[in-house]
Image 1 (cartoon, rainbow, N blue to C red):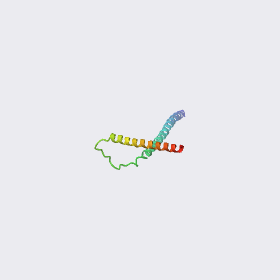
Image 2: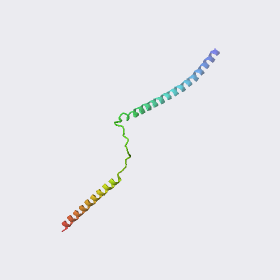
Image 3: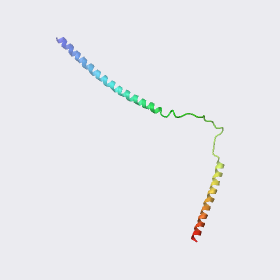
Image 4: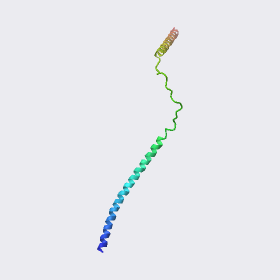
Length: 108
């Protein structure tokens, strides 16, 4: 009888230690499952976000390499600026002249 009690006590202690180990492993498995689910969700979000802008671009023509480098045409730009400035000055002078004449005629 005392052997049986001793055996049952040992079995109970073994069962308790196994139960503790089982609970620890179960919590670890639950934590790992939650982490896996979160990573899987993030992976799916990245996959969806990565596919959004890739399908609407296509190459129509290849770029041609120019024969010589391009640069601004300084003399042409200066000549056009001079002509534009001259015409603008003449237009402003004429407008001021006619406004002055109109004011003088109205005052008289």
